Image (cartoon, rainbow, N blue to C red; front, side):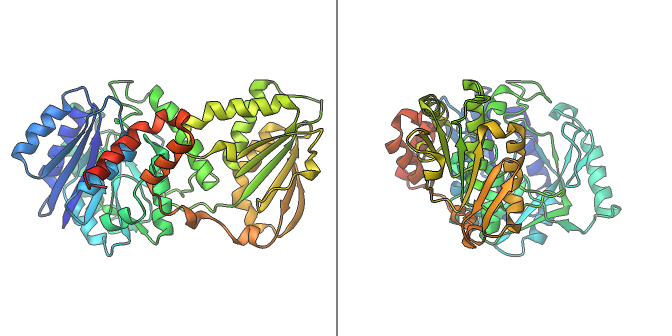
Length: 456
């Protein structure tokens, strides 16, 4: 099998050396290339990988020359475009390839629609799960217990009840056909620089016909999260970095905007793409009872906005001003056009019963009659229970639900989300919202250069 390892890294040199050695040692009879992207590192990464690439033709390297990291959402795709082989594997710097792992991938890559994940062995830095093996064999390259890892892998292959078995989970490292990846546009730059980009692309690949296999005959040791979350240059192992915390919130909110809810996975990390309904929410703020503070209102619409396709607030001028404030604060964090999603009405001139919106499902609520925590709970569950509804009006603990017709339930929009065109959506966003574009500017500049050089 010919396979390209897709490996971005930022200030991860000691981990990449460890990982690189494992690939070279344990690749077996397979023909590999290791495609590495240095993401503006300051720890000597570029000097080492460039020098190594001069003596090892299996190592192909590129560099983010800017001062701002592009993150793996962007650099995964850049490396896939540069890869030589039909099969690629998303790989992390903090992964150690076990002997025989590539054999297991080759055995299970039955067609171009198949995606194969290796089974991870991890130290106890995260909660246990059915999809992985928890075994503390070291949290740094210098403390890694290689012989014990090899012994564990041998026992899993020969003695475990899971030997020869597959499940349907997906997570890194995952191998795929380059053609299928590029056909849907790769990762969505909405999730720049990281977080939820994987859940998004797995949803899109499955909707495009992919099948997922986790092999229990191929393994990696995974130290976990050294790219950002536990990167020792900005935090300590086991403690979330501030940059990861901030970015995870941004990406989670964008995932919910796009898919209507959180990623769906079972106990083996087998995914189920979200069904995307067309939902509008109307909130009547006209009552003078229990009026929220400005901060409470901003938090409230910040939650409602991500779960709806349009949000309509009926109240006095104060709330229209706060909507504008929210948009100004939030717009830079998303490629969705918030001014097309949030509307404010003067209750004296446009009462609730005169608001006509196009959304297929409309949820109406009155501020003075709801409990905010119940609204939060209801909206998170709503996409999963709505299939049981029929057209009509329903009363709930948060207000009235109006399902307009049969198509409101049967016609969902997740298939519209399969393909992305990153350079197009960034160009349009820059044209419409130049004042909010600074966050995404490095991405568009990079992609424009890729296109200029006929790589994109």
